[in-house]
Image: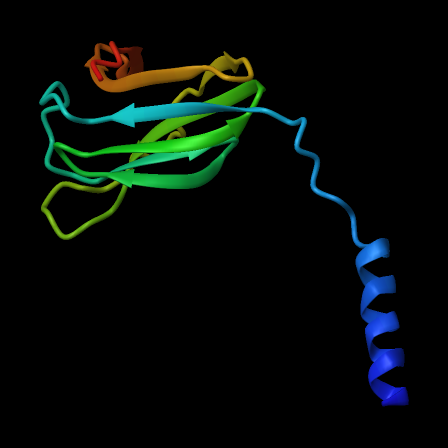
Length: 126
């Protein structure tokens, strides 16, 4: 009985030391879509957020992220895969920077331009 009391007191003291999650930090929702066939490749496209691979998209797919408010660096890159010709280039593609505000819901779709792939604003269409 005495050991269980000390174990309970020890666990309670650990919870007092642990950092508390702050509920006042709000997030934004970022939706990245490859639903349209604007990019003429069947290769997998990698989405890098802050230069870290965060998602992979095939044709007709979309993914979403809860991100803290602030500036976000986004980069698209072809990923090596099973299909022929799906080799990434030698140079790193340019990054796009967007600013998210707390509570934002933003949708971007992957498009193809003269300089390669880029993210283009899209309607939410709920």
